[in-house]
Length: 99
Image (tube, rainbow, N blue to C red; front, side, top):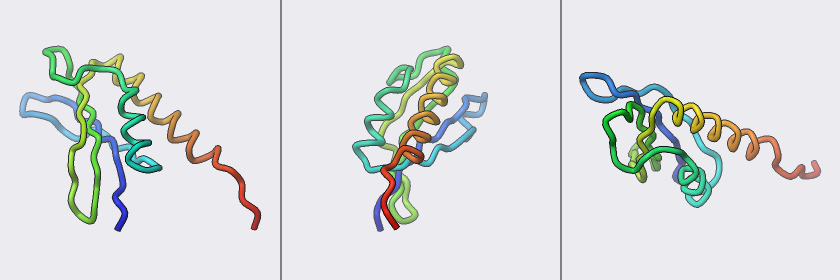
């Protein structure tokens, strides 16, 4: 089975992190990594960074975290906008094939 890719958004709470949202990605590993590289934030947690973005590879029933990015709220908003814009572009601007 081919792997699929997801970006998971987690919010920091006193007990740790909780899952706040998931973005299934279209495309292959290179497309997922390219998109994730465009996200704002830091690779290491900083004290005000309350939101974590994880790039996951899902193969069969196993998930592997490939990359992590930590962001503050304004960066997280920009990141969500970027992910949605790129997903929309990939899904709607595919070449039209004849029937």
